[in-house]
Image (cartoon, rainbow, N blue to C red; front, side, top):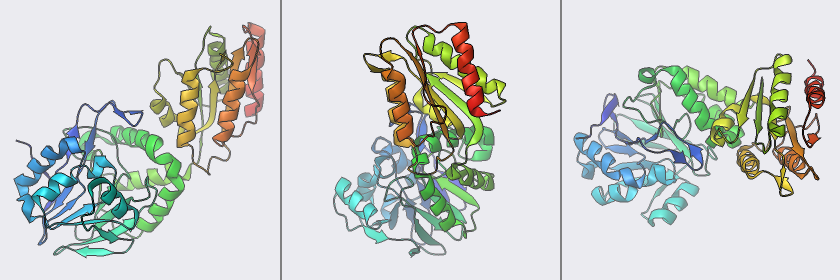
Length: 394
């Protein structure tokens, strides 16, 4: 039998644990994920979110341990995406009289598009729902990370039901941050932010400002563990990440055909080390792009290298740069330095295409494109290292 977990008196986690999820929209989830839903037992039983359709039975079984689903009077749909709302049809069949609340207008229209018009109740920032001794207050968190996103706050419990914000794709038998340990939870939260939330950082800052007046004792996200012991830490960390302030740190990413671009990558890495700049090297044949993005989140320098293949950059590098472009904030990357590099034979289109892509992502190409024809020898590699050292200015 599956069990609900009481996170505060009369507030229960009733979601699903996806131990085997390994890829979420192109982002590797090597530790699985959870689809969190929360049941509040008050005069009017209320469910906050549901879960992926495949986990509807888990959710229902956990709800049944606490209450007959038919007694649920309210369902709050903080987000339309199906990992949050997918079990709504199953819940509505069991609780036909429950009213469903969603953000106006996008949440309501999105739910209707997915599941048909069920007379969803539109809510906006500042609207409230009294369910007994508790009152839920809604705040729209537009574009964190869809137009319909919103959060709900329970005053009596001081719980923020935070939807995608502060989440982690992380499956565990534990439900709380202090049971897992802060370093692990922050690492998972950083990967989640870099691969899902980063392009909407200015919206995150706006949402943090809107939530700043709340007395938050617990954050209950839609994915991962519940924050109960480290709420100040994750709030401060989100403020830092969303500021997009770069750290003095370098990421060197490349693919290579006959090792010349690889040799250039290692020389660029050594240049940063010589300058006293912490750096990491990522061969795209050995590292997934979503893991690299976790490092890119806070890196001031991003060097990307490709040889020329078939008159262009290598497909692996093109895929990484396409992924990077999709996650690049529209504004806020001022001061970040992109370093395109690579080798070529009869045409340097590969490195040139890398430069064009980095520029479109918003990087400053202050060092130009570092390209080398044919095989690099010791002298040319030393020249490359000096160019990077001089460009970094240490």
